[in-house]
Length: 388
Image 1 (cartoon, one colour):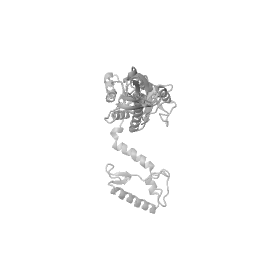
Image 2: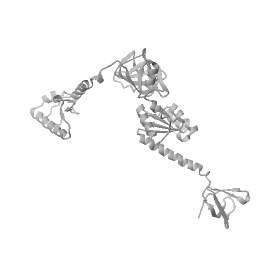
Image 3: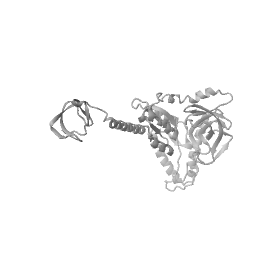
Image 4: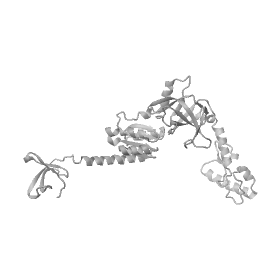
């Protein structure tokens, strides 16, 4: 709106008040341009209206005139968003005591040990609670040691001091300190074990989402290790790897950044199937210590933010492995042949032997071992080169 001739801006002002303060010719130009915009949107099949004149918010899209330069209309947008959420999403926004909490990230914090960052959507968390979370090795039941939040206007992921709480109500992000959280899975629900709750029922419920994922791990123990950022991305990657066009076996899965323990798990394949000593890391970081250990143990770590790029890297790696194997075993492969020495074509009788032969049967190739049957099959070496 600040582009209109004669417009008198009011910094970060409410648009309706700003428009009422303009000259008549400016208001006329605004309505002219507004009508042109409405016509263009109507032609695209959209019903639109100024947000304060909207007859039906479910049928009409609200238009909020703004200026990114002066900030005019921004308060109107914020007000409209709050109003729409309160009107259209009353049930979803209403706070209830039933706990609804999801694990977002598992992190190692110096001085605190392994912690989990969770989003508390509904209910209340208390420092005296016992929580049940899903882990790769099964459900984890552990008492809460501390409930932490960052200081106001601070980001939870940034290192720094935290505020300690006896209890926290929804909705907000919380860092939970507790024992045995190393194997917790990001993206899974968190439950609180109450006095009337059955622990086994909560354990079954918390692992129900990952049973299908754990079932995709190769029971033979031969396959690559897969690492992803969340439970959803891990499930998508596993579905892709088991598809008929790909068929890459998986022997181990994990969620979160790649650490030394993940490299150690992948190194087991060095004794079983060397080519599967690989970690496919999808949308996760690799720690410096893990990279150094992988280099030392000769473990391949492929990283990518797109599943298909991971597949391309692994396919290229397997092709290289096949080529290297061919080169290693080409001297062991024997192609039978029968040769007859031509007496008139003996050019050198000692190392190296250079002579002419006639191929009576089979195929003579570079690398084929030669022996003399009439002299007790004495070996005289391998074919180094051929000329016709």
